[in-house]
Image: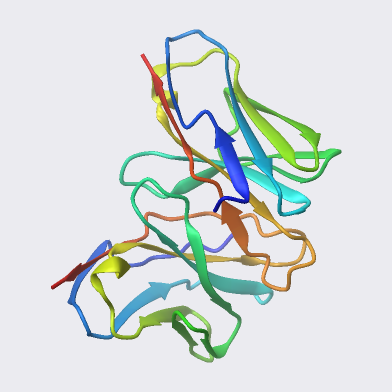
Length: 111
Length: 114
């Protein structure tokens, strides 16, 4: 499984757009990129998944450049409730998605 | 997610005791997983099961065993608990037919081994 690297922590203010970048230089051809969100003492929650270019849902956008060696999770207009740890994962869908979570990025949103 | 339940939610035990953590799901998913999370760290996969007759070791299976009693139930056992198994344990499920293979996590079990 491809290793991922993301910032340990980030600070933001309410109403701002937050971009968290994940590096995955060894991503394989059939790997997908998935982001999860985790609040303290809760299980992670799926946010978004993509393979290439851009994916958008009601929560976030995921930008993936052509070489797929990195990806950026974009959270529009964050609020205090977006304070959480965000995990970037890379792995294949076929044969089962055996996830490996790194340490994640701790986002702290200030008022 | 209320569709994935874990019991107990908290457990304190002593070194050498056998402990079982249980996970039940009403999502109808075939795939189930057990993870542990240590403070400030990400989740590490212990075991996973893609159907009732399938059990696979994950990243850190030593000292743990699992049982898939039914599609909806997946139990994790610590045969002889040790202090460094103190952690937050999560069960998760996923649907093999989902195009995103999204995992749904339970609320976690906080285990303390004294």
